[in-house]
Amino acid sequence: MPDAATEPRGPRLVLLGKQGAGKGTQAVRLEEHYRIFRLSTGDLFRDAAAAGTELGREAKGYIDRGFLVPDDIVIGLVREQLAIDDRAQHGFVLDGFPRTRQQAAELDKILDGCPLDLAVDLDVPTEVVLQRIAGRRVCSNCGANYHVDNPPEHNWTCDVCGHEVVQREDDTPEAVMRRLELYEMKTLPVIQHYRRAGILAHVDASDETEEVFKRLVELVDSYFDAGSRAL
Ligand code: ADP
Ligand code: ZN
Figure (cartoon, rainbow, N blue to C red):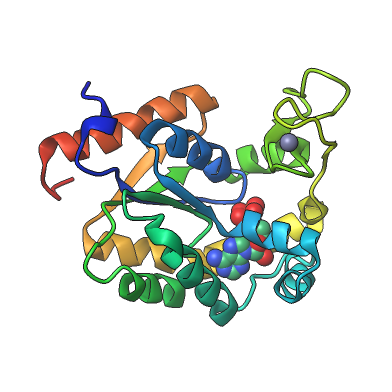
């Protein structure tokens, strides 16, 4: 398998999938593997909320109730983030964006001239994501993911940065159900958008992290090896 670092540029990817499909975890792995820029809108909002900025306070009101943050706020934020220091120039992976048809259309405009390579839908049955989310725990500082079945080494302090590992406030059963309903309503049209654009790929994400990551890398590498947009 060719080393992606020797490619002229890294991939430009969007990860799609229900809450708990593993987008966040796989995005971090892809960032490291391909040395590309990772943008997670959920992490950005949580950081802004922790820092107490106006954006953060506004977003938290929606997030804690399980609602989507309004499109204009999210789109403005993403546009700003992608523009900083050409950081996305060598490739990127977007986690949690776009999540509505309008966000997908705006992203196409933002990326004008350097379109996405692949939009990957991480497929997982709803029963599985409900179990994953119930046990999900995250680092309150760096966002590293854990699970009650896969805790950090020492007493719920993060293996990466040593801060406290907690349950997310929006991982309550009510908020999770609302997010899954919103996913069906708002995000399925995004999948359609990329299917029509001919860049949609599916990866079975019901297996463990390592296996899913291998499938993702195989998919992305085969896309680049083929040197074409044919999937
Ligand atoms: P999840 O995928 O489990 O919902 P995320 O960490 O990706 O978790 O996002 C947390 C919350 O942040 C979402 O429920 C939503 O309220 C908000 N959010 C993140 N990304 C977007 C987006 N692209 N559009 C609207 N809201 C968003
Ligand atoms: Zn941490």
